[in-house]
Length: 79
Image (cartoon, rainbow, N blue to C red):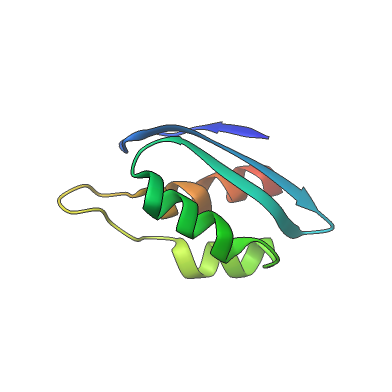
C-alpha cells in the first residue's frame, strides 16, 4: 500500500503487511537515516503494536512526524 503523507518532509510511505505483521516499510523523502531506522525497527511487529508505539509522536513544532504518519497509514490500512 502507498500512503500520501501530510505535514512532514517525506511525501509518501509504502508498506507491506502480511497476516497483520509489518513486512516492509519505505519512506519517500524526509530524513533518510531516521526513516531507515524506523523501517528496520517496525519490521516483524504487529500493526497494532506499531500504531500504539508511534501514534502521536511530534517532530519539532509540527503536530505530526514521519512515525506518526506511519501510524496513520496503518490505521487507514486496517479499515
